[in-house]
Amino acid sequence: MRLKPRQVEAFRAVMMAGGITAAADAMNVTQPAVSRLIRDLEDIVQMTLFERIGARLVPTAEATQLYREVERLYLGLDQIAQAADDIRLHKNTVLRIASVTSLVRPYLHQAIIDVIGSRLDIPLVIDVENSRYIWDMVEQNRYDLGLVFGSPRMNDKNAVLLHNSNAVAAMAPGHRLASRDVITPHDLLDERILIPGRNSPLRLALDRAFSIEEHQPVSTMETSMLNCCYFAGAGMGVGIVDQTSLRSAGAQVLAIPFEPKIEVSYYAIRPSGAHRIAVLEDLIGRMQDIMNSSGDTT
Image 1 (cartoon, helix red, strand yellow):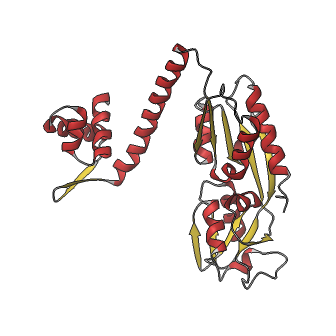
Image 2: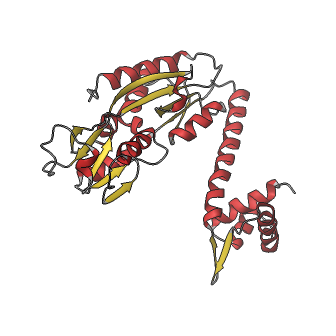
């Protein structure tokens, strides 16, 4: 049995409205009709999507995950509708750009200001996502340009190196390790370590570096690179990050070289076989200039 668009629409309406009654009003159908569509959807996906707690209908964890995928579908439909309008009205093609958070401010902001500025003939869509998602969407031609962390797929001919540097240990001024010339995994065993998420290439290298220690750090916090910088500045621990993220976060921290050396690279990626777009080439070049002149060369 296949999913029906009406079932997905009912699921989305319930998630957005917070209940069957409001969803039925939004869809202009009866409450039993919405309930039946949700039951049919649950039968097809073989998951419980909502639980009743008193008079409230509460989405399950599975429903929350599914909702994100549904929203991406609707975003795609919205983009198709927008593209159709642009074609019908003979507007210029929208350029779609996605970036990891660490490259948005000040790098991408400044590059767009410098390259595009007041040009009204270049419509833009700019999304902030994680590297894995950006890679997948660029490969599906959903983005014209992606700005990502380094990845095993970086030998792709459509990947252009923006900048690389070595990881550093970020900590608040006055930290007990602040006088060290370098920081090693052994130095951090009694500290809370602020580490990037498991999908980050930096995290994979960190796991290998700490794996040789007889003991593991007493405490860890796994979060985004920018959050690692913020929390390090607040004295909550030592963040293993890169200078690019430190500059983006603007956190008041000391940055001490980390050993073993871990290279952190950023790339611009484009769809396979895509035609060169002059303004995107200029944008990539400007990103390289800004990042390589920022002093991120630890």
